[in-house]
Picture 1: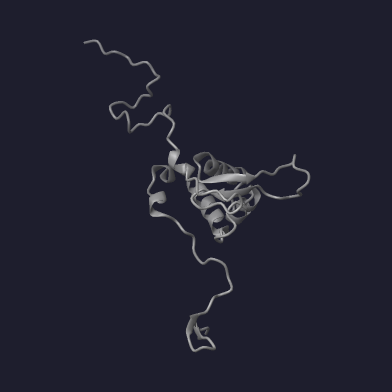
Picture 2: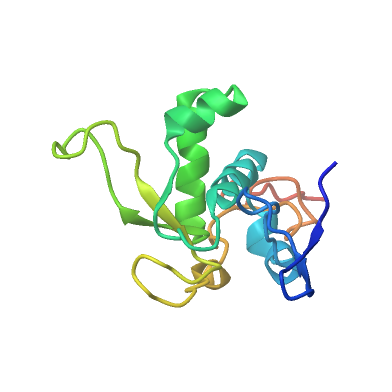
Length: 163
């Protein structure tokens, strides 16, 4: 059993540090309550948590996560994992700080590096952009909740009932 507190040579009580990294993932209430967060697919939420899990407070902008690695960790297809990461980038929760791919020959087998936009970027020294707050749902998507009086898509011509 390890003790959390220890005494220094001067007699003061000091909290003992444990050698691991961070022991939690910081999720803000204001972020989770936004409509953009609720619009994420469940796989995109898991991908965000996987990236946030790798953030230790000093490495934002250098977070590695490949679609292959995410797919293997969660038993998904590579396409589903790639789509989840792409969705996070499109909606502004993460940004690419260093791209990678088959055309980048100086780095072998290295995944794209990301930054979480909710936090300060340690690589570029930029403040949190929080670009997901600017996201708006597309206007051209039909929603049955907007048009409760009909079940037919607006582009379908309506038949007039003659009495």
